[in-house]
Length: 294
Image 1 (cartoon, one colour):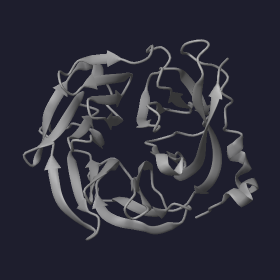
Image 2 (image 1 turned 30 degrees about the vertical axis):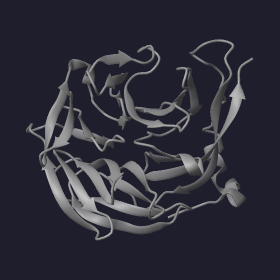
Image 3 (image 1 turned 45 degrees about the horizontal axis):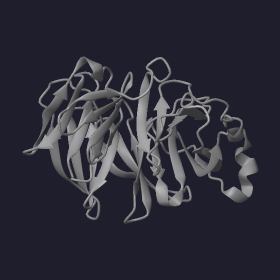
């Protein structure tokens, strides 16, 4: 493992080259938005195997990282536990998973997507307390998100489906061809933001689907996270930027990537962005917001 801190950022100076100046906006001209800028904090480059997702456990002040380690039912997938200053506390905190991807936390339980099941883990006891199957044989489950009313949603990449956890199993909540390559989710009280091939917003009350930005600008996507200001951080598949979408739907690239960026996590009260990346790495960035526009 290699870690760095703000006092020795020269050791990870190569990350700075990733930073992309906020050079354009695809939203309204003349508006002043608080746009994010990123400062490297630390990097971990050992101990992970295809890290897909990272999530913050506020109660225990730690991070969990899902390691796919072969997207198949091989039992080799695991979760790592990492400190907020970039130390691997437990490389294999939870083992025996198949291909863990998205994660969410609620009421002391860690929910982990695992190919065709949603796995429930009691954090304090460090044990699996539930396995909730999908109704499809090959759903390609990908991400999970929990809204303030404790409704739990899971995306299915192969089945073009959004599932909801009910009655000890996953039930089809909505299925549509617009859910092509269903991937990242972010559930709010009234809406579910969804990224797959495109970004969509789905009403939780009547299931109406709304396109958020022009599809030609933002496509083939990996994850979506709230920025604490009614905007969103969005990652795209491949060697493409991490994007920021403002509350007024201005779209800006904020981090140019040389490697794949997976399912990110943003900790609003710490202004920290966590980025699982290609080459089995995890990056942390400090986020500051500054006014842009005339």
